[in-house]
Length: 135
Length: 381
Image 1 (spheres, chains in turn orange, yellow):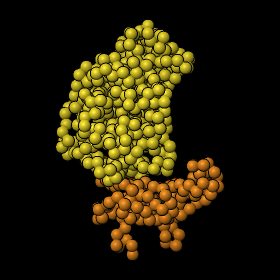
Image 2: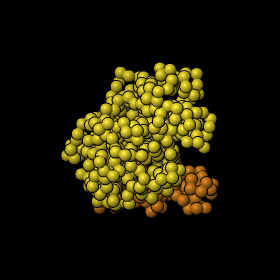
Image 3: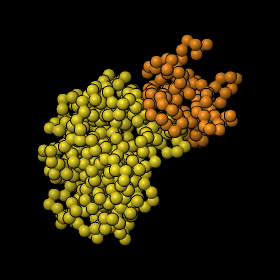
Image 4: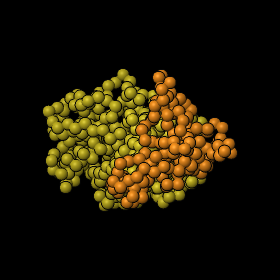
């Protein structure tokens, strides 16, 4: 089954370490995800791509019990706060095995988000950091 | 800039009407507003018509069946704030002197919309939507964080639903007209944890309309014109600027502007129709609208201050929770409810001696913004 990216330029995998790609403003320091060609805070074009910290903390989450376009219920989504002082909205995986709690450590993974009839859509998810995941 | 008054208000009953076209609902509300104003459709000089899920030039079709043709008609979309936006534009066209008399209509038929029976999602291609975001998830995320950081309980949040459903029982326009207990609310179907079905409003079919006129002309039609003292629409700022997702910066900023414009403060507001799409929102909006300090919102609710009979009844109509939420109609319907209140025509739901009322609506999910739009109107007699 062919694999397609959810969106171009959202993430990369270098030396086996996946990272979300944001943009950082050279003028005001604002970090954005997804990356933008201009800084939305000050409109400077002096922006550089930045590999975002893969680890963050769970800011909040919800489990959804109605189907969405791509996800059968139940699925869980949340906001993850990362050290660059921004929050990232994401699918959360591993919540059935590891009860979620606001403030817990989360880590980003590149995974299949959903499968259509003829393709696999690859995106990012966050999972709770457990003993095993810290390997 | 001159004073603008509401001289007529009309609404359909809110509910599920899959057999009725959107324009039929709009026409019914427009005819009701014209009748209430005692004005001929021939005297309407312009119209704004808010709708999200209908087709093209819905406004012309609806107003055709209310006798309004051959004038300037503008169709408006601003998600849940569409209705308030239509009123705002109509207000502006009169206060600026362009026109003297116009009508603002809001309609929605959720049961015939492409998202009937589904959660409300962002526009196609929106990254958050692709990742599973919807309006209820957005506020479930806010509610979880709110409960965690404030200690407010699910029972306290459900009490908002109990209050508003109680109010709606005696509102002839309400969809539910049914009492629910805290247990009913909490034990209803879990949709976006911790939000259960009865903590959220139903998506609904309905329409509402208001006829506006300059104050000098309004006096020809009514001895009790209801003046629009403030009319504010504001779009959401970048989400990265929102420090805390449990506090709506856009509601706070729009209310500040509205109070300044009206020359009143939150302490002068005697009734409020606010956007209780989810029960938790009402508690959060008490703070953002300046009705109390942060941390005092549950006390305001539990002490009955915001109940009918309290100092500041909030959603005396039943709000979105009991009336239902036909997206683009809601903002106009809130203003119609306040007009009836300020005229003393609200029947069993009447707030005694109310002279100043505030309407607040917001919505529209967009990635990287707090929300699409917020609308605040302050009305007075």
